[in-house]
Length: 259
DNA sequence: ATCTATTCCTGGCTGC
DNA sequence: TGCAGCCAGGAATAGA
Image 1 (cartoon, rainbow, N blue to C red):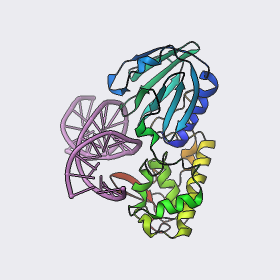
Image 2: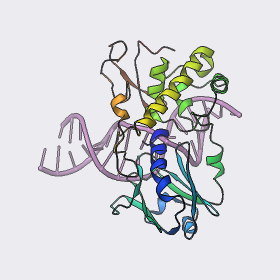
Image 3: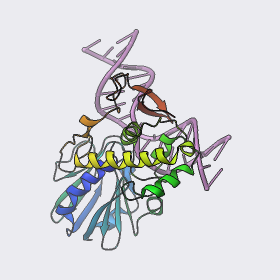
Image 4: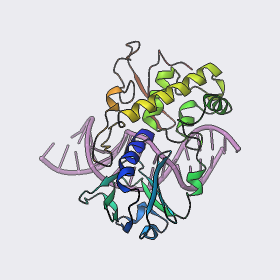
């Protein structure tokens, strides 16, 4: 489940190797993962590779390739195609594989960044604390599904939502509109902290996430609650609870995290 | 406009 | 040992 830190790690691996390269060919193996005429990328030079929420945005001379990894997607550099290789991008300086077991990922070509992607919410590491606080408190939804909503904030997924809420001591079902300014500000701080640490750790390798060079991250070793149902809370020692909130597995400490 | 539930997809795990 | 059935979840979509 690649989220912001994992996608950032992939983009940082791709940038020095492929900015300035020319795409020679795009071959789609599994049509399900394609959106738009990805073949039109052939012949274009890569001007920039950046991250937009969980999207990898490859800026070309006259278009954009937007790659979303979904749950099990990977972009791999110079590797042998396997059974889950869904597309192959051949460049004058190597090859990129788009592998994805479950095919929730997408590789999309369009002239400009697609509207659906462009109108996602702000970057968690760019939005100011005050802006975040007022944005948050204007919404009535439960805090966890709100943080997962990419039109509210772009880049958080299930892992970093649970980890940030734990650090901020906020219950995942707490109503956004009922949080004090102080607690909303604390959540902003927790989000910035957890994402920054995770990027420094090259992300969390749960499921079988690896970056573009096949390397694992190590932030999973620093998880406090995600995937730790039944284990003692690192803060109070009581068992971490696993429940379902908004159809998502949710991990929290019932004692430390209040509504 | 906002919020919630459902659906897609398949490897791996659980339990009989 | 084999296998049916369930689980994981990002986000598009539909429905309230």
